[in-house]
Length: 433
Image 1 (tube, rainbow, N blue to C red):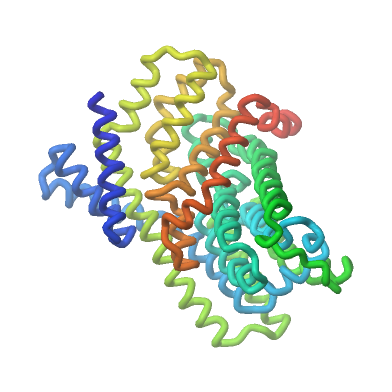
Image 2 (spheres, rainbow, N blue to C red; image 1 turned 60 degrees about the horizontal axis):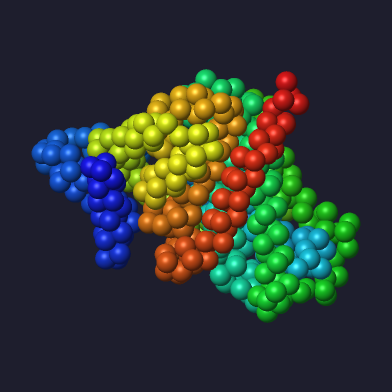
């Protein structure tokens, strides 16, 4: 009972502090400090020493370097005509599909997820390219924002994925097999999202105008899409050939965009400086939230919330399906106020033995865990994709969360499907030996 009261107390503080209109990063710091002072009986001096150490460690994380680089890549693409060509190139493919170019949110995030490994970077980069165009063309704003929030989370599931690397190291599961295991579930979620847009467009035609007037041929479409596809090939190739890590591949992508724009005589000093300035604003927003989330993760760790909740679940001696359902609820609760890496690191030592003992494949559970972490990206009060979209669109957090809710449900459906049909996860790794 005590651990449940502590958990509810932390969640309540997050809602209250953010509900007062506090800046997100400041709100996370405030809740972290109050949690340690009021619930963990820390002295003010000990709180300062503890959180300053975590702040420095999280702020100097090498993985964070990929975020501004990928955002810079998106900003330069956004300010060139490559983004416009992306839409024109997709017109022959999407024009006659119910939902039209709303599907570019899904396609774009799915493709970019294969080069970024970061949910925040995927959402911010694709959002910079698509939100303005969709608004200009008269598409429903709720569907536009919601589909982007949901599809942006695929950056954690479709390889390369930083969370998968963390899980693989902790669980001693092959990271290459984890990468292969994430491909089909990622495509399944993308398919569910596109199916939902298809349904919405058929039921409410005014939400997605049908664009039959495309004069672009399929040959012209291929030429228009060539820059984006080339960029994806370069970034993915640098990772899977071993030339670059995912973080280093972000720099490779920026270099490729610069060369591409130079070749096409689109690169100007103004374009570059504007892109850098916008990148600084977006990166500060995203990275400050991630760093301050590490403070809250530390506070929650000192309160023993992940460990005590997991031990409480283990004491119930549940059947395998019931255990999986309880673990899903457990991870959704943690996702309300923790980032994915923190969830994985703090809970896995307790949950993985329970899962293995119940007969689940650790490789399969890794993908299930990542989907649970993805759910946390689009749930308030600390859903990173929601905050990124708030910065991009200026909409209220509640409005964005409501728009993202159908995609939250669809991701739950995907988790249910891989639970009923585990071969969706295991087939590719088994095929690859």
